[in-house]
Image 1 (cartoon, chains in turn yellow, brown, purple, cyan):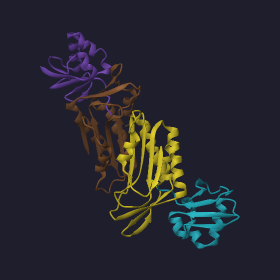
Image 2 (cartoon, rainbow over the protein chains, first blue to last red):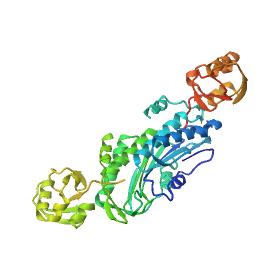
Image 3 (cartoon, one colour):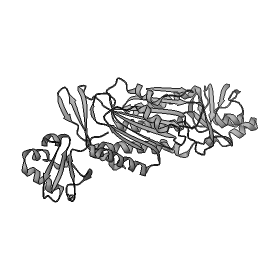
Length: 146
Length: 146
Length: 83
Length: 83
């Protein structure tokens, strides 16, 4: 059960190994990794701004909500900020449970809430200039599933 | 897009890194890892029997169905057989897509079909003897979601 | 005709062998099962409840009333527990 | 009262500073927004469409009609795009 907000990269494999090491009670481990995608072919970098005073506690609230809803044996949220290049990792979540359904649903839930409730803003720097990424209505709608 | 049936262990982190390396078109990567869980505290080993002539093609069929249904940029299924101890990895799936919804749904789909349509059988070896793991009705029902 | 028959998990354990060649004139999977059950007690023990036995003809899952046709290999096993 | 005001993303860019201390008698978030909009054009540019501006009082998201109360820090920013 931990949340990390950092500028540096992370290693998904090492993080997952740490979550399950020396444990025999975890049957299912789900991870999601978000990567910088170059949609138009002219993306130079993605700049992630955040609200430092709020970010950690916002992520912890989202994680606590997942822990309250599902029987989780472990969970992790890592979210980066700063300047990221195409192909680089933006964030990851991982959830571990006895059963696959709880692990899948809780990871999906974490992602839906991170998208619209974690105080991050993305700016795309391209050859033609820079532009803030608009929030998608579908992302806000996705929260109603839960 | 690959399927591996093997007795040896695998490294989730390395597998995920391979799926996304040198690519800038992947925005979302989901992985599921299944681990040997010691429910009762007396499990010595889980024995996984399979139907070698059928296993590879059955997994490929399931993967092909996922690729037909979702816009995937990469996918991977690894399933082990043989004798595994508590805490060890049994199998993994990974799916990569432009969007998180496709990555989550397709990984969830792969798992539901692997559970009930991949020719593996689990036998639990405990202090009190050995017993075949019964298929759960819920696993068969889960297929109807898709 | 001669057909290769393979068994897995507890079906294999009850029958006592992982595979065997069977000489049969059975037209369908169900016919073959009835024929084996009539032959020896160990087949009857394995096939006592066919609702928990799955069948594959040449590595493809089929229903009990499926004709054997040109099948080279038939497999009997419990519901699968992969993943 | 004095309140710390912080801005993020394009709200910050339009207003031109990441934070400032504002002296106000506004009772609610909406009152404060109206006051700022009336002060200078750059606030009007940032707050022209409040349906795309989110507000947090002391790091908790709130609605526009929320009373400022004892708030020390108010934040204005676009809909979040995390993940």
